[in-house]
Amino acid sequence: MRVVLLDATHHPPGWSWHNVGTPAPDWPAIEAAIRRLDGAEWPFLWLHTAEPVELGPPDNALCVIGGCGEYFVSLARGGAEVRYDDPARGDELVSVWAGIQQGVQKRRSCCPGIERVLVIARHFAETGELHPDATWVEV
Image 1 (spheres, rainbow, N blue to C red):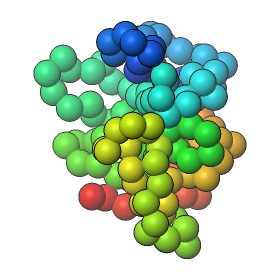
Image 2 (cartoon, rainbow, N blue to C red; image 1 turned 180 degrees about the vertical axis):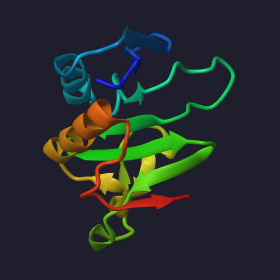
Image 3 (cartoon, rainbow, N blue to C red; image 1 turned 60 degrees about the vertical axis):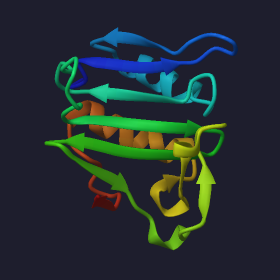
Image 4 (cartoon, rainbow, N blue to C red; image 1 turned 45 degrees about the vertical axis):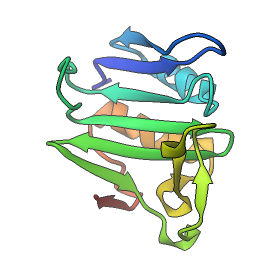
């Protein structure tokens, strides 16, 4: 695996946010963390291929936000963001993160099912690159 850190954000009801880091995760740990995403208590995670810089943006890190059937997937690389894109899904807004305005994304920027997300994440975890069979747009 090319992932040096799995960084999942946990927000238990009534408690403050905290990150749960797993150094050098194997695929079963990454898969379990993605399957645990629920858009609320476990809203998002990052797969880092380089050690994160404390005050800087992530570099070559895949972010997965959401759960319950809609997953926003993006890559932070070189100060830019690249997003999953499926124009056929349209521009309707969908919630991927309960109760947070920023958790609303265009449907075209979201994967509609966990199996597709797992394929994309596994490819990234193994290669450090975006899945070639998905469409990506830089924003």
